[in-house]
Length: 168
Image (cartoon, rainbow, N blue to C red; front, top):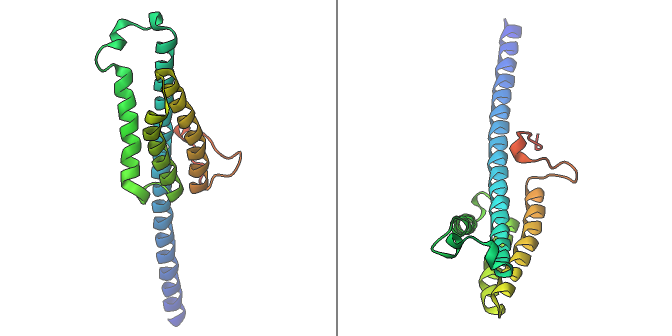
């Protein structure tokens, strides 16, 4: 009788531990996925900023190659720029809720550098060229900080959108 009761008690403790560990693992994985998605969208936002500034440089270099509609009002390109910048500002405002302190520092530095670049350039071309350099430099910093936060070693990083979870 006591053997049966002892076995039942051990089984209950083991079952509780397995369920608890499985739930913790599930929540940790979901949190990792949320962070990975956030970093993916931040990298996409930086990419959109870089492309916007490069298109502005082309407009300056070759004004005849740019459709007249892009010179008037808020073009889709400008709207995309504003959305990308808004996404970065939102993550900075949220702080360390979804991103690490290193990433928050990189994004805050990016916004500060972009604001400061307005006063450094004397010509429009120089303004956009400086912004391209700023975005490219911060993109590399963001990539390194995100890899550290997600604990991705060298050579283990796969594109998140492919559906592969390198954190497993």
